[in-house]
Each structure stands twice: as C-alpha cells, then as structure tokens.
Length: 324
View 1: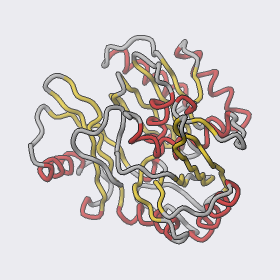
View 2: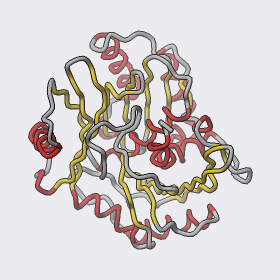
View 3: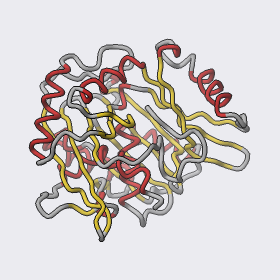
View 4: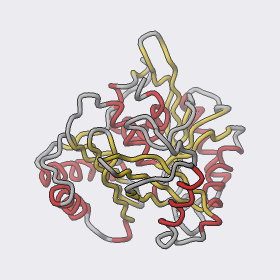
C-alpha cells in the first residue's frame, strides 16, 4: 500500500500518482473501471464486474486471502473483456477492508522527519496488530487536524497478503501502482461525487464479510469502525452505536449526508438495509453517486447496482483529482 505521509490533499487518503484504470478484488466479485479525460471532464469509459466462486477470496488479516489465484486472474480478464478493454498495463488495486487494519492515531506533536513519524506509528499500532510488524506493510496519511493535534490514518497489512492480491493482477501483465482499501476508496468517491455535502457525513460500507462505518467532518476522516460479519453484531446496532458516539464524543448532531455502499450484495434485502439505516438516523441513506465527479460513456447503463460496484475502484482513481 502506498501513501503520502505528509500534507496529502484535503479529503483524499492514501494518495499516489493518478492511474486511468482500477481493479477491485472482493470476496464475491472483481470489478474493472477505466476513466478518460475529455473536454467536458472525467468520463467512465469502461466498467464491468465478474463473479467469483464462494471461498476463492476470503479476506483475512492473518490467513490466506486468495485460495485459487488462477480463478481470480481469469475473472479479472473476463471483466476486462465484458468492459471492452484489454488488461491495463498499470492499475490501482482495491482490496477488502478485512485484509488490513486501519487505525486512527492522534498526536499532539509529530516529529519533523518522516522516518521518525513512521517509527512512531509502528510503535503505536504494534500491540493491536495480530502479526509481527517486521512482516507488515504500514502506510499512513493525515486524516484530520485540530488545534494542537494531528490524527493519522494508519493502515497495516501483512506483506504476504498484499502480494497475494498483487500477484493475480501481475499475472495479467498489469502493474499495481497503488493498493488501497475498499472503504477508503468509496469514501473518496463519495466526497468527490457529492460536492454540495456540508456538515458531518456518515458512510456505511456493507461487504459480504464485513461492515465499515466512517464519519467525515469538513472532508476529514474523524471516525472509522470495521466489524466482521462473524461478529454477529446487527447492522442496526452498529449504526446506533456510531450515532451515539458521534453525538456524545464528537459533539455532532444530525448527519448532513448518509451514504450507503454495498447493499446490492444483499439482493432484495438491500432496500431493507437502506430503510433501517434511514429510519434510525432520520436521514435518507443514499447510494454513492459518482456522477458529480465523472460522467459515464453513453454505452454504459447506469443503475444502482453499477454505482455500488464501481464506487471503490472509481474512488481509487479519483483520489488525486478531487482537489483539481
């Protein structure tokens, strides 16, 4: 995973050099997105998903993530064919949140040298990381800043797990220029697509194996929570607890926006998920709609399911364009 550790663009996390294609590998599918810049702005020129058999990808902090690399590589190739493109020479790579751990770390003062900041971050996350940091890939970026304090978003993943995801892409002849977490990329997409959002906003990302809730204030990440589906903590309870934390600890009121991504995983149950969140928060939960940041080529049929599927890979492509 790659990041800028100092002064990243506002509302952008784990930034790197822009790419024009992105590939997301999730527990049940792969998705490919390609964008181009045209006179009117950015355009999604191609996108498609391909399903993965159950058990082929099982996101994990400590175990094997990809059990049949050839099947995943073939699915990516299939998605590229469905999108009408060749496997890209270079692409951003989006992996599941359960493959890594994101922590928000607050410091009253940071060392001036980047190497010292790296050491400080590693020391802070060492006890909470269930694998040796010598075997880890650790990145960090500024999440938000208050008077006299800086909060970093630090992500740690086993290097071997990151390599698993990279290898299935390299098998296509595609170089993964940057690796990002799904929810971080979705958050970038939400912020880029909803330029009128003001006040505190909540993002709820639902995946097959986990749920992520994140709160942004003035475009900065102030809260992040990840829960595995096996924790058997109902989504309604997670949303309620997050709202209480927002009110009690962050001195927040009613959310200005609530974004919901991933409800399509639940099929017909997706609408029930959206309705429950909306009722609990008294705010209508909306899909992450990137059309405020990028148009779609005429040949692409845009539906709620398509917006759901491409939010993460497109968000990975938009990260460096959000301040442009």
